[in-house]
Image 1 (cartoon, rainbow, N blue to C red):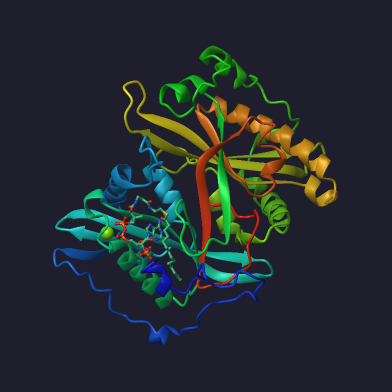
Image 2 (spheres, rainbow, N blue to C red; image 1 turned 180 degrees about the vertical axis):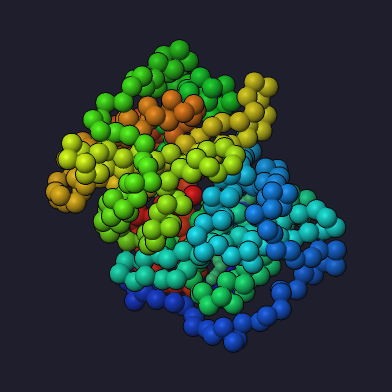
Length: 397
Ligand code: YNC
Ligand code: MG
């Protein structure tokens, strides 16, 4: 019953789920891709390419998402992407203006979809690919089959650049997830999360006790822990690359990308996006790395609070996994030590909650660090690539 998705080069639910040879679903040539935009059925609509280096246009996208982007099932919270977070997400190395696609009615931006180029590794194959995100349609234009039009238009623009694969994620089930993760939440400001209706109070506890339960120490305890700096780029790239080899679906980053995605740019305008830390051994070697980014959520109806400040676990790595690859207890102990410090640092930076997904090695520390599973799931999808199911190993913003 997926009228649109059943026509697309993605595995369908009725197809045999047994082990398959991995590869593209269909092969095309750039010459065969139309140079004309997909037709917009309604005459008052027109395609626009958004220039996100222009502050005014960036603000228009910010405003559309602010009012109309992803909400939880009960419509209590809505993702609130800041201008600087959008700049980080969409102006990454190699970004293309044509992949920032809008629809206007009159002067008003009423729909958006975007992609960025990325190399991705699926098991042993490296693919030139794209990452599609920020599909958003104004609430008044929902249910009009505009989403398939946006998806077909961005596919066309990506194909014209000779790229045939994409990765994307979503909370809804479509044909057919390659991986599914659960969201976990770790309260840092439990009382506020309680007041906005995010954290319920268990019947055998009281708000006061809950607040105490989620307190973190004042100071970190890992020796050699400090903020990542530009001089750490090579070491962090090597460590993260080696660590990610252990997973089946990962990005493959150039030095520029490592810098863009992981290094806090003090000169960048607007609110801070990324926090990255390293552990430097006594010999000067970088042994561990972790990072998180800031994504606020609007609280849709609360008198007291307008937004929740959430940290999302991003990439991390530890050389314990490389030096003693089979020693899970050693890795578990190390990750728990650094992640406990990460929570302290996030608390110091005024985050209300720390979010993480059930991927990479997160199962080794989520429960011990008092993360609790939420109701949200995140499905990962590959466009025009069949792959066997993947358990853990992706991470994205
Ligand atoms: C979704 N999230 O199933 P069928 S995530 C993909 N991703 O098609 P209409 C989606 N498809 O079932 P509405 C989707 N949500 O008939 C719905 N669909 O086959 C499919 N929400 O279209 C749906 N942002 O226009 C159905 O639906 C068809 O008006 C119905 O619009 C949907 O960014 C939406 O959650 C999501 O703004 C735009 O509800 C709207 O309801 C909205 O009648 C709030 O559409 C915000 C929200 C989605 C966040 C994200 C990733 C998007 C990935 C898109 C797929 C990319 C494929 C790869 C392309 C490049 C290929 C290369 C190379
Ligand atoms: Mg629609």
